[in-house]
Length: 308
Image 1: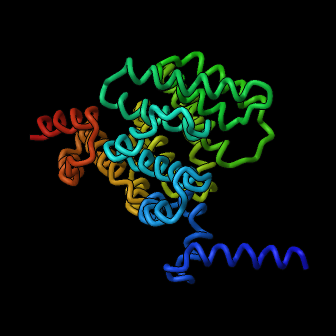
Image 2: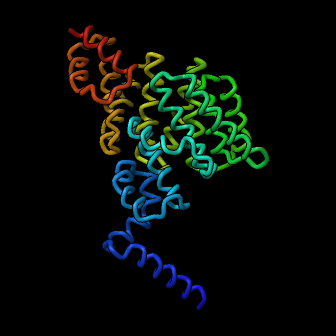
């Protein structure tokens, strides 16, 4: 009886807060938003503004929604918008620790993409210090992967790689699919940076396997793209082309237009080195040049000259 009354009370509070919204529609969105933001970043960004408006600012749920927003903006490479969202929080000392860490990491990555390396390192160090301080005795393995990811951003490859090898060994029995995906994705980053080409392919394939069960279509996009790139770097062109071709429909479904642009450039590069000039030109013609970072912009311009 007590549990039934408690459930009714929770329902009454919920309906009172959301009384000016279509109850059936908003209840469904409220229940599904946590799952939606883990599997569909595009839809997540559409739903969040209204939910952020209806929740008390700086409440626990509000911070959760803001983290979903940061994750989605970063995953879809909307860096200008992400930086704008992060700026108000940089000097706020009252933030929850997890939220503060995410702000520092994402801001560091945003400014690092603009080649402001010294300032980026400062924010990465701030995030690293917090994570290490709160994970000394009973570390959360996903948080340790975040620390290693910071080492990668700071180009401390040997330190981050050794750290993740220890994490892999220590938590080898853990079945958390999100942890496994993040672990092997980051081990792939380090193996590539350290020129461990066979391990690079191995880790990318493991991340690809785990991406199939995270439920997040964008995880599949990134993992598939990374497998293709791993084969690209060792001149296994047919395998690279096979995986790049898989990226495009997945990226279209995920709304990851940056991945589509990069994939067309990589395919053009592959066809060019196979002397399939018309196929290379066709791939390059599909690039809109709107979602390219500086590295891919240079590759695009170089291929454009080579294919003329």
